[in-house]
Length: 63
Image (tube, rainbow, N blue to C red):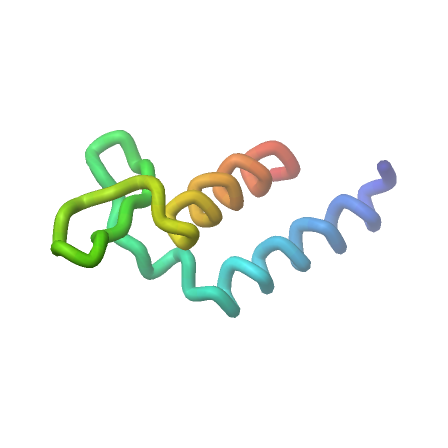
């Protein structure tokens, strides 16, 4: 992968993260994103929390 392709991929991932507002989710002491379920309990298994944590891993791979 060229630097140009990597930069384009990083910008696309950041755009997706920003559009979904995944960075707005709270983080725990280990910097892992979490969300709240319908009962107000902390969960890491909502679609947003899973996507935010996966996006963080992807971005760290390319940065």
